View 1 (cartoon, rainbow, N blue to C red):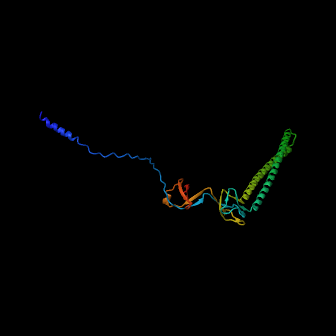
View 2: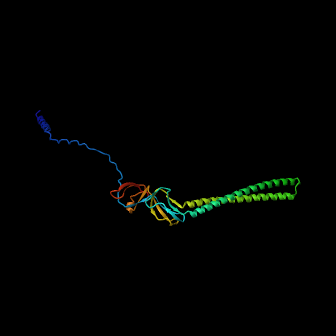
View 3: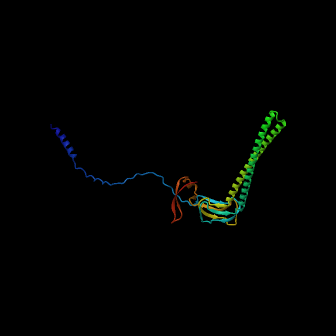
Length: 272
C-alpha cells in the first residue's frame, strides 16, 4: 500500500493549488438611459440664386378693330378696372349711319317678300281657275260639246298659269334670300358699331396708355395695356446646368422682394 501515498499527495497539492484566492474584478458599469428615433430617407431640395422678373399672368393690348377718331379715353396707368368697363370711346357716326342704311334695306326687303308672297297666292288662284276651266272644257270636248280650239285655249291658259306660279315662287325665293342677306347686314352693322366702345376684357390694372382724345385709332395698333392682377408669372433665366434641375409641375420655393420686405412663396414650374 506504500506506493499509493505519493499519488495522494500530488492530488492534494493539486487540489490545494486550485483554491488560491480569486483576483479583484472591476465593478460593473452603470446603466445609462438613451433615447432612440426612427430615421427616414427623403429628398433634400437644392438651392441656387437666380434673378427674375415678375410679370402679370395675363396681359392684354387693347386695340381698335375699326378706323375712327378717339372721342374719349377712360383711364390712366395705375387705374384698376373691372370686366366690361368702357376704356376707349371712338367716333361712331359713320358706323351708325351704315347701321341705319342696313335697317332700311332690311325693311325694303321685307316689303318685297310680302309682295312676292301675294304674287304667289294670286298665281295659285290662277292655276286653280285654269285647272277648273280646263277640266270643264275637256269634259265638254269629250262629249263633243266644245271645239278643239276651245280645248287648246284652255290647255294654253293652264300652262301659262302654272308658269306664272313657278315664276312667282322663284321671285319669292329670291326675295327671301335677299331678306336673309339684309338681316345679316343689319347684324354686321350693329357689330361694327359696337367696336366703337372698347371695354376691359377682365379685371385688371391699366399699365400703359398710348392714345389721347382726337387721335386716330387704327386697327391692330395698341391703345392701352391691361394686366390681370389675380395671378403673376416669374420669368427666370438659367444656364443649362441649373435648368436641368428644374422640371415642369415641380414646386419651387421662391424669395420675392428685397429685405426687409422679402417674402417666401411657393410657385409651380409651368414652362421651361
